Length: 372
Image 1 (cartoon, one colour):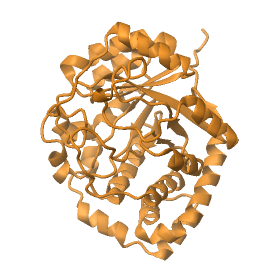
Image 2 (image 1 turned 180 degrees about the vertical axis):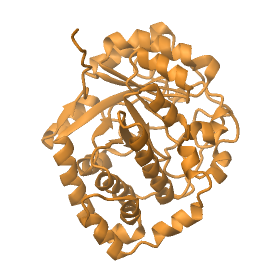
Image 3 (image 1 turned 45 degrees about the vertical axis):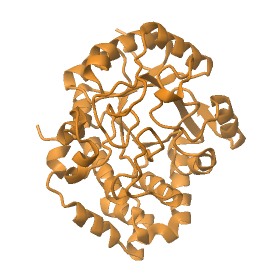
Image 4 (image 1 turned 120 degrees about the horizontal axis):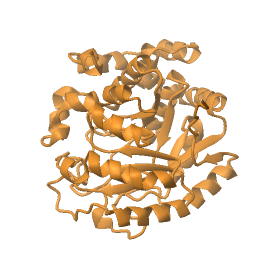
């Protein structure tokens, strides 16, 4: 069975980048006027030629978001289970070569974290781990689901890529969604950022959403790490990935996130920074390109930026996030994956949303059962 790797393997990165750079003002105007944007339109909307049209893009993105999602924002929170990792990603605080404290939560500690998170009002939990098969593999994740599922309406994961059979097991235990970021789609430089560990296998990671679709997952989250390579080219390939998945696994929902590199142990500096305006351009471009996809903006971004950007396309936000295992009950900055930028409490985020006449949504669906 063919996968997305077969679709893009051999594509010329520089040719794709130049095709975006070559878009003109006329291309941008056409993209803004069309009812059914295609990938060429997406190229135009993320191109430098679109920068003068950011206001028009923002207005259209706002209108499309209101039509599809109304004035609602889904709220979720990450629960870091472990920062043990066997990879050596140069941009990540969990890099196994970094001299940091390591911790993996016990059953008792998981439930202690859950109690604090429940007191915040959350029903949507995102489980996060480093990538360490022995310490936080399928058995550990399955046990965590067993512990937490009775207490939360939705549980998602952002963990190491797994095989299809593992995903099927976790789906059967109530797993709602999996978020897996390719980091960069540029195969020829991917190894530079992931020199060791299972994550260094570009093809295996790229085919993870295919395995998730085959396992019947409810939702898949995609994204690239903004700051590694040219953000426009990586975002184009993310859009291609989204289009491929929607065609081949049409019963699954999809989400796009916009992680920008944040300070962490190791002090990796972004290679190609993306400005605040460019990030907003990218958010609007995705909404215009795809009116159904969920768009998420995390606490990596500042409070000011999130307050002003979310109405222009965003449908999900985290709040009160901790990036260290055990961080809700017993915070320890020495265990953090990265430093959050927006450190407001969920109560403060809810107050902000309501002040703008938005409704915070703690869960977005309930399972339906056929009566027999």
